[in-house]
Length: 290
Image (tube, helix red, strand yellow):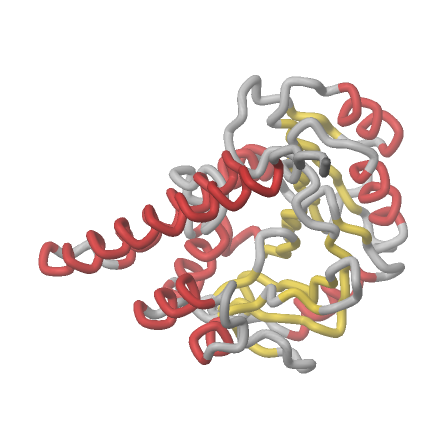
């Protein structure tokens, strides 16, 4: 039996046709042996089961929605491959893309994680390699990113539009190649994040442990984005803000930093309510004109 060079862990929630496309393009992304594990957090496993059978993958059904990081940890459990790839199901791989990412890993023995450039459907580059947010940077980005996209805090935070390989503070968990040794040494993803910020937290802990997070823009992967929750955005908006509050609390844990935590919680609560109102308005049926 051939030992896989990399275990691909794909966390899904009641997936659609995009999962089959992900698995199909993955077969052309690497000539090296790849082990595919699907972790289905949803309650309808029809699509995931069919894709697993068609592509020789292993299907893991937790029985409840574990969230992204915890499900990824479950999918990575007992892996023997030297590399783990945690990936969303709404990715489409270019031919040889995973081989190229693994080749970059060989060039960077200091790397605990590596991430490709993620392309939006319109061909623009999503800022998937970012710096760890400072307090002022994080606040400025949160407050002004939507109304003033070119603000200096967002530009500094999203400093990933370069075309050369470089270290970053953290890399997007949508497509993240992890050295298994490093991933296991830091305890994997923090189970306390249901969705969002688990990748920020992991990148920070890898850095503290002496590993680098390396951005590899020469590898470009198409990311459709949000396919599992686009129809019902409210729960994910709330999850995003809860995770942001958890991250701030864990980064500023000392007693004298409580004003930082309190201010962050208040600001995030206000922002969450505004985004929930906007999402509800966008989904509300339009009134026909008379």
